[in-house]
Structures are given as C-alpha cells and as structure tokens.
Length: 219
View 1: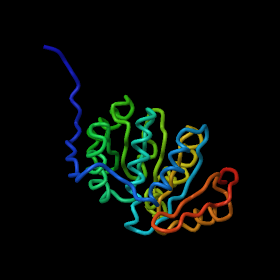
View 2 (view 1 turned 90 degrees about the vertical axis):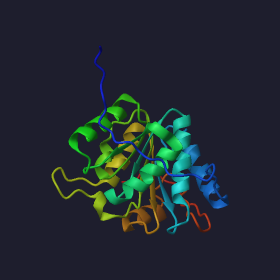
View 3 (view 1 turned 30 degrees about the vertical axis):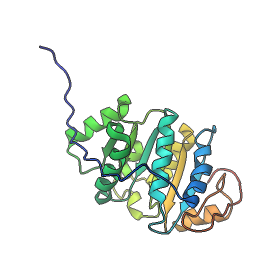
C-alpha cells in the first residue's frame, strides 16, 4: 500500500465542438496584433472592444492556445460566478485537464486543491471571478478580463481592491499581456485608450479596426 493525494476537484464536462476553432478576417486581424505582443518583453495593456456576439471569446481562446505553445500560463476573469460554468466547459473542450477554476462559491477543500493544481503547474489555464486575479500561475503570459467595465470586479470587503487594477499591476510586474474585453468599455478604459495611454493598438471586433496612439504605461 502507498499513500497518494486525491484532489477534491469535480469533473469538468467539455462542451461539444463541431470542429476546430477558426477566426474570421476581423478576429484574425485582432489576434495577429495581440499574439505578437505575447513574445515581447513588456506587452502592456490592450482593449478588445466589440459588440456582444462579435466573437471576442474566440480570440481569447486562440490567445490562450498561443500562450500554451509558448509554455506560458493564462488567466481568464469573468465578472460573475454564473458565467463561469459555460466558459469552463468551453475551455475544457480545447485545453482538457490543464484548466482550473477559482471562485468564492467553491467548497474550501476543492478551492484549495484547485489552487494546488495551479501552483504546481498541472493547470496552466485558470478561469474565475475577481479573486482569481491572485492565482499562483507559473510563467504567466496573459491576463484577460471579460466585460472589464463590470462593477463586480471591485471588492467591497476587506481587503478592498479592483481586479482590473491588480491585473494591470501584475501584468507589468510579471511581463504578461493584460487584455480588457468589452462591448461597453468603462469610461476610464476608453479615456485611457483614446488619449494614447495604451502602449499599442487596440481593435474593435465586429467593426473596422482602428489603432490608438502609442504611448507609455497607463497611470
């Protein structure tokens, strides 16, 4: 007999896929710009602005796949726990057992075991709500905030923090791309983009791509 750890992680049922993931012309244009930033020393922050249903999630999946090819980790944040299961199934369909989930509704034991999978490098793709921004991902390559304008990214309990600002700080510190996705960006994000505070081009999925002026880091 020998002892071996048993993780308290529920099985993730992958979503059914009709075929390989393909991007249209606009999605490809956005992906090409963003994917190139995954290989630079300081990729900075980007805004992916597109109407609901324009295909931002497909771009997210392609970028995560590229991160895994580069042996980097990926973190995908969503504003509500209710959105986690559908994204989790979609990610599992593409990345299998490399996916972990972190949010406050998980039982403490399962949350700890998911944390251990991330910390050990068994899970390189993490999906979760605002607290997942602190996930111990190894060699982090990208942090994605879907619907970045949602107020639920701000914690009203102690310690108080804004997951978006933590993500930007962490991305700068760990040299990871921070991608803010939204159909209706927050006033702060749109202002920073239009005034040239983003260090590279941003793209509007579902419409004509347009570059913002290039400048330094967000402040």
